[in-house]
Length: 595
Image (cartoon, rainbow, N blue to C red; front, top):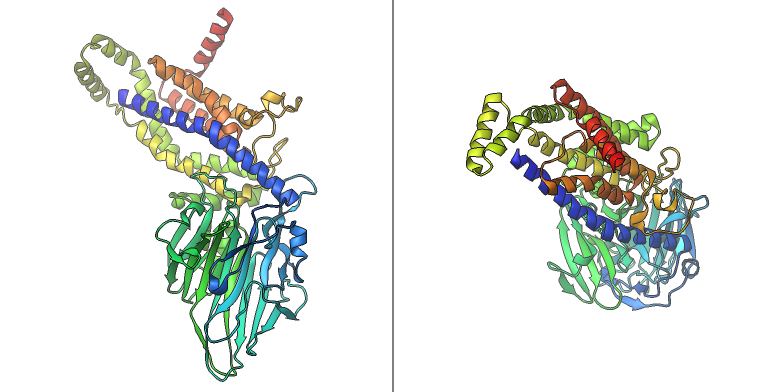
């Protein structure tokens, strides 16, 4: 029993440290990042440190530019309009860049009239983020780059079933063409062609680039990877922005460079919490993937794919095709692309974590329940019920063991009192009692430990997947991915004084804290006064901790607490163990009345 208490005490102290760090450090930082991102997206504020990038041969070369508003930056070049069911934007005829893309199905906030989420942005404007495709070679004369003036020769507006083609001819008469196609969702198909007008054979290597100027704001949480991501022949690789300057990078002209040779299948790009861009060569095609960051001026982060070199005989045409994903990381959509096109590990662009063997099935269940009930919050509660039902055998064993231990508590207290000066004799007497009564003191701990990965995996699914974003529940919860908007410190909306983020304790966090307190009252108070104080403060600490968490996570935690209370009380009653909840509550109110 002592070992069990020490284990619980260690777990409680760990939660206290994590909780205090989350409340007073991570919570306020997360809120500041969220507000900054919303203001930036809504107002498209200019970034005075923005830079342009010229990439001959795919090497980053930043050059200082005058920063313009997004609209002015877009107006600096002629454009081909993009208009599909899921995205809108444009392609710049200068460089043939995909540098203007908005997601139609996602808004910055839940407020009416909120702007669409902007994913790609042009150079010279705030936070440039774009993709460009070209050729590298030595004997072809001038090659198309970021400043090449392309001409629209086929199509008008890029939409589903209506591709557009750009063309440019260099000083040696070699003609280059780019054809862009788009599907109903977020997948572009970019086909590059080159026609050799020389007398000699050309050797050219097609490439694609995604460039991102400046390090974007991230949540900075261990639960979630934000940065570069790639999958190479069955291996997924993640790289944070601060890792771009580290080994095993090598110096290449004015950039730090890391290359990965891929035999037949993979992709590379950038991932945010909800959004992603990725260059995807056709499966079965060998290529070289590269991470790069400029080492002069403002950091320009870059991911490239370089396909194998093509030999183009005189008078003939060669082509190469690359997919470009730019959009929301919807689980079912990524899975569909992975299976339909054979793109290895695209589904793993969602950060499923170490317990992917749990998080993936949980996400599948949650998505399918949501399709049936039509409310993501209700789906969370039903999934929690389902998981608790599956875990019931483990919970039963745990609570049965706890019930038996409670029945032996008078005997164990006598042994402690009798042998308080001789710990070894106390231990022998305890073990003899457990053997006589056929009770295993560790039996209550193991089932609880086995359940921890399950509950953490549920938490992970709710945190990283986009399906909860802006999903309403009931009443005042209009967005399950945002904290409960009510607050006890503002009179639940009566007073508008703007308290700090960690004081925004809404109704659902308070309900969660109450259910947590009730769950703890099912057991007698620990005899150790330090443990007693820690357990008394835990519900209050977690109420503040979860006050800044997304409402969907708080609802999940509350539902789990309620189900745990029902399970524990029912099982322990069936074993003849006393339920301490009502006695503890009576004792609490009796003390208050006496005071």
